[in-house]
Image 1: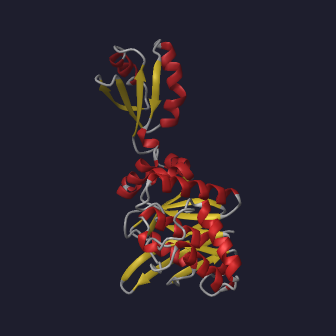
Image 2 (image 1 turned 90 degrees about the horizontal axis):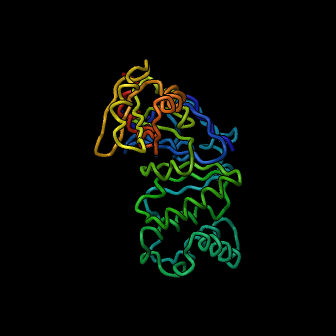
Image 3 (image 1 turned 120 degrees about the horizontal axis):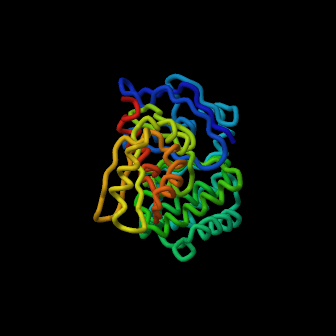
Length: 313
């Protein structure tokens, strides 16, 4: 199912939640990233139809999620904050929501048991929720949201407070759902986890969308910002000669030598050309390397530069 926002703005009195957001989201996993107060939750609530935009158009599968109640059956929502009946067991809690949708008691329990089991809660599902760890609570929220087999799953900070095992289970299940053609939106501060699941991201700050799309394509648009590329030769003693040789190239802005780690860092605003030319240069200089890398390739670095606003200066 497709999600489309056109020039969407949401005001809370004199405070602007989001401003002129336009994007189209197709099936698969999309990460929505930004600092606290950036507008991530506001964007998600508008897509869910839980909040009406002040201006702009929102369409999910061609329909308005704020007025189309049938459309809401196609959503699964995992809120950032807990929303439990603490006296219930995980099994009773998930089954309760199924019964609200006219599933009979026996069938509801069967479906709920399967959903919780798939998320690793076999032994805990009959315990009361008030005894659950943070990870168990996260998995129970996900089970409740996905037990109806929704076409669109929206998850607000699903990894917050979750242990590595819980994160691994949730990530695996999300990948499985995406392979089935589901549309999954995830907001998260844990950039490494998002990076391992998808390259498709939306970066938002101060209510404004800074970038949207494949993170590699976004990075190409930022190639006017100097980017560090590090080279680690196999043998020590080659750094100074290599640094001198690299300074002869027009695409080298500066070089930094780290003799302790036997590493040369080249700063450039033409990274693609550097990667193309490096093999030739190293071959001519008869230098073998064990590693060439750029920390700037990480989602963390991309996020930091965009939120800093360095690309707009």
